[in-house]
Length: 329
Ligand code: BTN
Image (cartoon, rainbow, N blue to C red; front, side, top):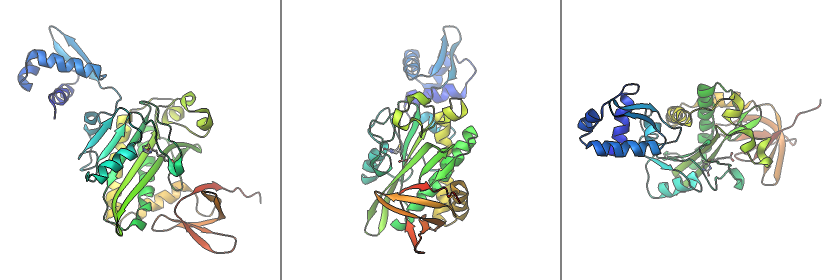
């Protein structure tokens, strides 16, 4: 931990009480001028710290930036976000960065998080709108010992973790649109992009990329997605702490992932089915121009959608864009 981080942790522990420059300098074993230099730097980062020649320093508040120290403070996970967090003020895509790290041997639980993405990627070659300091753009590295055909289930448990984190933080009741869209009032609030690296017949790594529209105002979305997208701010009228939201997500994700690895994710899949509200519906699935129409029979244990076509045959679908067909009869 750097001296600056240690000083921050010390001031936070004393939150609400003045601490003299002398006691900070003695506790930290650094000079008074070094204390002052770090305080100035913390203020530049957005921390609100009062100073008085007589009383010393008073920690007031942290900025809502996704600093490693902020995320790790009160994080209850044992590995996720604990091993390593790579914090970037700007990057093209956190998934691309995470893939590079995974290929270089980064351990499970490594998190890449950015304040802004210049080429945020969505599914099927789409862009993910990623304005500065408004959303969560995060990618986790997983190294599960599973065959590749089990990996799609990770999208389902991630979607449940995101919906639960949103409910915990803001009370919003999100629904899940297969396979990876999180919606509120039928508008997209979050999306998941998983990318898998395989070696022989085994998964080498899975990157779980998550984008959540958190404090984005309606007018900030580009016109072409303005009517289809929403954010926590639009839905609740309140700005929420992105730090708290990512922390809640990591805590829930680690628990659900543990259940998945232990073969105990049935309840999560049932929860997914309830939130998705899709079983028994007639849908149209578009897979890059190839279209299937049919009735959703179930989601199987691998996370595939079982769709029964008009010829009576059931197809297992792993990806695609779905539209619910509202029958007029
Ligand atoms: C989708 O709904 O199409 C998936 C969107 C996923 C966006 C996230 S933002 C963080 C991570 N990095 C990316 O480039 N994409 C994912």
